[in-house]
Image (cartoon, rainbow, N blue to C red; front, side):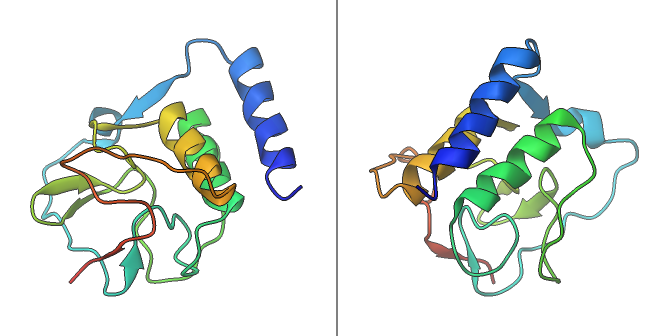
Length: 133
């Protein structure tokens, strides 16, 4: 039941906002700045830094994709879509390490929250893995 409402929200987003499938890091770039490192004890897929992977993490990605104001999060927490160093450059919220925060990432988090297996790829962290400095 916990996953049902976010799935309905996700289906509504897909149905009503065609063409809004990804928001890449290029849209957020304006001037070059130093890339920060991730805080300690960050979990891969934990969009709001509450140390849990729940459907609200997927909702945070959807909010970012739609360009809406960000949801509240526990600070210090990277903003979804921001770049960070983690053995290379990563985009916070890019669960599958494909260079963009998109609906696939949100679906991956929802599947994980429903306790379904999610393979993020051989070059990416598993959802829930501890990452950071």
